[in-house]
Image 1: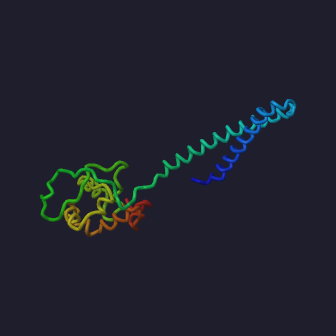
Image 2 (image 1 turned 90 degrees about the horizontal axis):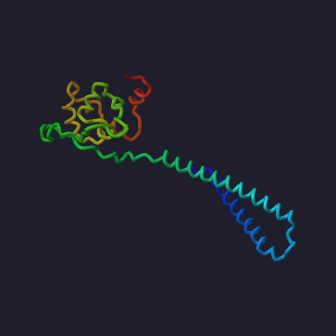
Image 3 (image 1 turned 135 degrees about the horizontal axis):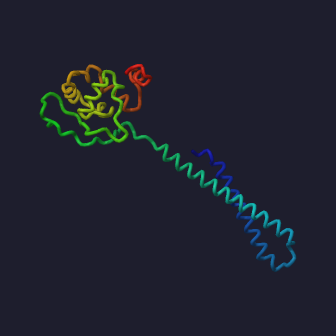
Length: 200
């Protein structure tokens, strides 16, 4: 992003030289008028041509500086730093399909009404989650790796009981450990296979 600093410093020096030349020409015109004939018409024309050339160069350099500033601003927008993995976005309200105390075994984790902007994570990258189980997770309100990564032992027990036809999969396949790696941007051996198309 800052690879053009040398160019910008050169631009500043060119602008300072232009200002000095303008000052010199203005001084000659103001004080030289009292010394009639001290500057020949040919010299004045040469100075005016130099001044015009420098003004044109200055205008081009100003345009180039504006283009570089716009490029730097675009890079800032494109390369905005990612959100830290340690603080996942706040969850939406908990689904109200069942009261929290309805099941004495385990504790219901935070569920979402829908995936966050950007869509749900590919839960099939967790070993033990196939297309049908992913759909079941979405029906329960589980869409993202960081949700699973934050589950306590009680919450794991609750989800294990709620996975109709797949009871016990969360603990058996250790979803929490896998989701913790995936939520931080890492990969597991299984998720690499999914990514390369070897699974599903």
